[in-house]
Image (cartoon, rainbow, N blue to C red):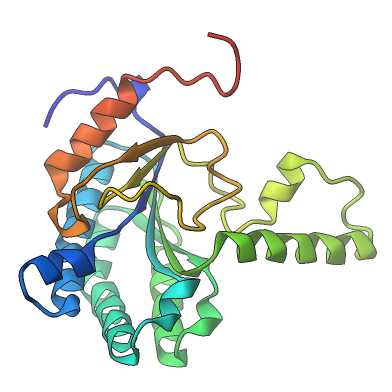
Amino acid sequence: MQNIEKSKLPIHVAIIMDGNGRWAKLRNLPRVDGHLQGMESVRDVITTTRNLNIPYLTLYAFSKENWTRSAQEVSRLLEILGLYLQSELPLMMDKNIRFNILGNLKDFPKRLQNHVKDVMDKTAGNTSLTLSIALSYSGREEIINAVKLILEDVKKGAVKRVNEKVFSRYLYTGNIPDPDLLIRTSGEMRVSNFLLWQIAYTELYVTDKLWPDFGKEAYIEALMAYSLRERRFGGAK
């Protein structure tokens, strides 16, 4: 592993995991094979993040729009998610990883909801890495949901004044710092309705690698590129 100065590592990395379907198509394989291979990249990235002591990692796994895919593909994706939770819980406990969900969990089958909640409960006391998975997630929906919650609390008198700090607390990421680095695989130059509020000053890194090919080395390369950047947050040089 290349040496990266600890002070130049991000606190929070967010990743748009894109390209599973294209990876499978290039190999004349079913799309589900791309998703299964992509799980290896998920494991590599989580392990590397934990080993580097980066405290927050958010992975965009299933968008609100993904429900429009074929029923067969959606069914397999949900099955893979269930298998992932079952197989990776021991690792989360061993590595002190807290599991978190961003998105509308109620969109999923009740059995999967219960499985997700069980893993969240069991890992709630872990403190080394907060792993957030965006499921049935929409950045616009998240913002609208925050506005509704704020209006309710304003009516109750619980909120007197709304500013950026207050607003942020009502987002799914209320207790999580904004991402320092957003990585997107597969070369697509868009943010795809992901963390729209939170990425206002996030550094973007786009790679042509498809997600199943994005392993430890590619991740380290992205972190190295980030460490060389000068972040100014809109200020002068």
